Length: 160
Image (cartoon, rainbow, N blue to C red):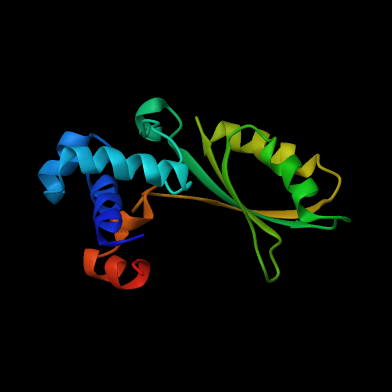
């Protein structure tokens, strides 16, 4: 990636859009160049999709629960992780080092559905224990990591 690519990715993250016209206004990069570079970034797998972001609260899935899962499983962790990912409401899952084997984030419609979520986890035979944390308030829910960086930092760390 070069400086123009990083500037485009930062602008996409900040603006929440891939509109070439809006990106041109933000970066000064010509629209034709933006089209070309966006296609290359898609081909390289840097840009994965053109989906709209959702406001989970407005959608009705405003209860966020963070669940630590301690498990005793055999074989590759991916096979066990598939069972965790099959639980309805799981939006993110991480395989971790340390005492906790997995950290799972779930978006739920109400506090009543938390019991169902935990029951679903505990129904998985390899799950030894869970530790759940309700979030009180969302301080940041940014799906685009570049939005959390200063442009100069991104340029220094990501350009060749």
